[in-house]
Amino acid sequence: MGIETKRKWVQIAAGLCVALLYGCSLGVAQDVHYNSMPGTNFANFHTFKWVGCIPGGEQVNQIMAQEIQNAVVSQVAGKGFTQTNADNADLYVGFQVAVQQQRQWNAWGGGGWRFGGMGQATSSTIDIGSLVVDIYSVANKQLVWTGTATKSVNPSGNQEKNLNNLNKGVAKLMKNFPPM
Image (cartoon, rainbow, N blue to C red):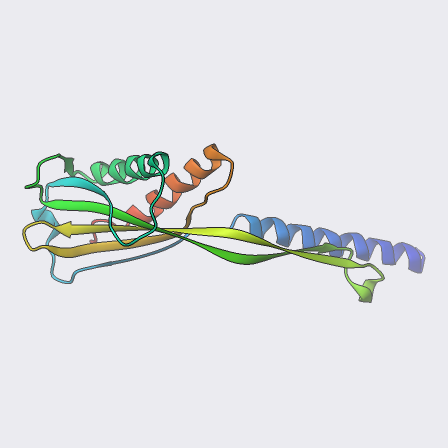
């Protein structure tokens, strides 16, 4: 095998590595963080009331608010809590959202100058959305559980992808509710 053939194989291999790394970066996992009030006995709670968007956060449109409500209520109800519209529910469940812009770098190419190829990089601005779910004890008027799922709210043009991402993020977040 000649030196030129070896160089081309190295370029192809390097290009495949870059493409593989780029493809893996597209499926960035959602980050979740949660915390609960120490000493809270969640076995004492049986009902919850959905209170919607908590004042102070960014406001979302009615469609997004309904999608968030459906995702969160489904998860809380799936944990054995009963939803009610009564003000004397054991828990109030609400949410906040925040959307931040971040710079994303996309690189591709044939392995760089070392292997005789040229690489390219472009930058773009992407929206990273965070969803915060807060759960309050009505009796104590205290926050008893809070969780944040980052990269779950994405205001892109693909509604099906957005909804799927939201549902996955909420499921991952609420996996830790109630705390054991």
